[in-house]
Amino acid sequence: QKEVEQNSGPLSVPEGAIASLNCTYSDRGSQSFFWYRQYSGKSPELIMFIYSNGDKEDGRFTAQLNKASQYVSLLIRDSQPSDSATYLCAVNGPGQSGGSNYKLTFGKGTLLTVNP
Amino acid sequence: EAQVTQNPRYLITVTGKKLTVTCSQNMNHEYMSWYRQDPGLGLRQIYYSMNVEVTDKGDVPEGYKVSRKEKRNFPLILESPSPNQTSLYFCASGREASYNSPLHFGNGTRLTVT
Image (cartoon, one colour):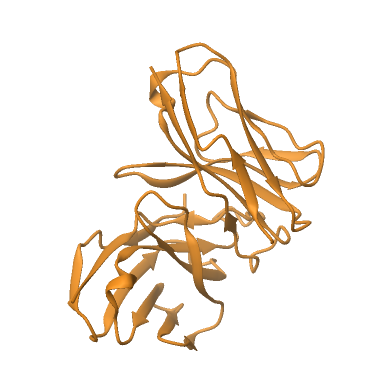
């Protein structure tokens, strides 16, 4: 059973600061990693995905992946009040049995609050 | 506009009354899936489909049925709803059944079973 762990928060940062969101996963065979943002009562919205070790930048967002440590993070630079939401980490890849498994497994999310 | 459409958005029903939540995508996606989201439990997969006529159980399939007769549609059926199925449900689709295919979510269906 794959597990994806996130700190539930809330994580509170001032406007303009860098918000750092972290995620660990249990299945060493996982191959792809996604960050979704979810506003209260709304559907998850894809922010970024990363497949290779290292950093991937997209505007104010940077995803970081370290497969050896089974760790993926999301940095949000110049945080804005509109970034206040729950951030979901999701992991995809083969299950421990070695068989194909196209299921995205989600963490429970980290609530981010950006204070004006 | 590319989207995943769920209906209804809100549904209140009584125990035992069969219901169907529809899901349709207009992106020609092969992969579709249903999730439920509950406080403290996060998103949990109910069923998924890798293509037409190919469906399989997710983590919490009990009490649910699905079908995939057409590529665009993936309805969720609750034959005899119970109060523990009160939840927020999301349908999602992906371009293909592969590890590198992100999921795109519908707007959700909030179901209450009394």
